[in-house]
Amino acid sequence: MTELNSMVVVKDNAIEIERQEELKEFLQEQEQQVLEQFKPGTFGCHELLDRTAMVSDSLERFIVSHPACVQNPEWYALARQAAEALHILYQKVGAVHLNGD
Image (cartoon, rainbow, N blue to C red; front, side, top):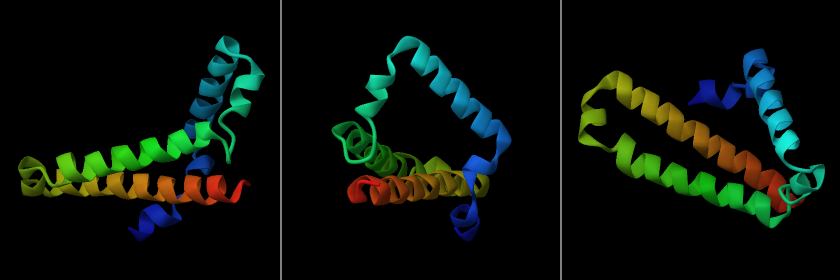
């Protein structure tokens, strides 16, 4: 768990390039004003927080605890890492969203 907590995803250049491409595609399809609806403190950001909680719960209930997953150390470790990453995402989004930063 400590490894994920210290992981700074934005510093991974490949991931940052991918994020920028996603944003560019979004802006080509939508107007800049649409992004305003998803800033921290908005319903759109709350929607992300809710979806993160929902997916995290589903991952824990249906993947991490699945008998096939529990029997395989590698699968279980990967599933736990995914669950921990979603938990960290939830905490980070929530901290900014609920503080209106």
